[in-house]
Amino acid sequence: MNNNDENTLLQVIEYFQENMDFILELTAEHVNLVGLAIIVAILIGVPLGIYLTTNDSLAGTVLNIASVIMTIPSIALFGLMVPIFSLINQGIGFLPAFIALILYSQLPIIRNTYTAINNVDPEIRDAAIGIGMSTTQRIFRVEIPNTIPVIMAGIRTAVVLNIGIGVIAAFIGAGGLGILIQQGITRGHQDMVIAGAITISVLGISADLFLRLLQRIFTSKGVSS
Image 1 (spheres, rainbow, N blue to C red):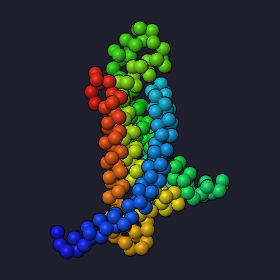
Image 2: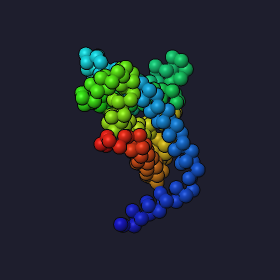
Image 3: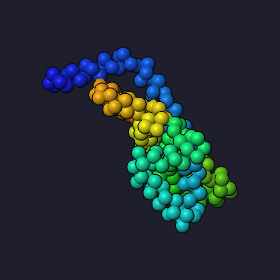
């Protein structure tokens, strides 16, 4: 490690020490934005993925639309949200970023749910029908418990993806850890940019580990993960 690298490292450590309260505040904003978006995305995506297993023609259309949304660059999608929500005087801030993150979350959640439910062992499904379970009972007591690892993999992907994409939300006034990146670039403060990148990475890794733990807790012992 040369002197420049050592100086940069010391500056980043010093920035963390002097601005920890500010970083924690931005982290809380980031978690709030991403967390709420993921909760709503799950409430939309999981039921939709389950329903699509009963309608293959609609499934192709929905998955294609979700795939197209994923191909839109994040800065462009956030930019599209601004004029749309300006019509209700919400063009800048939390709401457009919140909606954009929900849209970005749909593909991994819907696709994994749809694939998981479709791939449930037919013998298990037939057994549930054979003992008189209704469709709702079969889905919640048999199919979902047997597909939790795959569904959770989609949710984990969406969470980590949105933690990264949520950085762009700072550019439309939604706050979060993107402020460190934005202000660091604007002011030419390398230590600020690096501190933001490190915090975002740690948050993403921590979220994934936490969701892995939840997956293990809620996965039946007889189901391989």
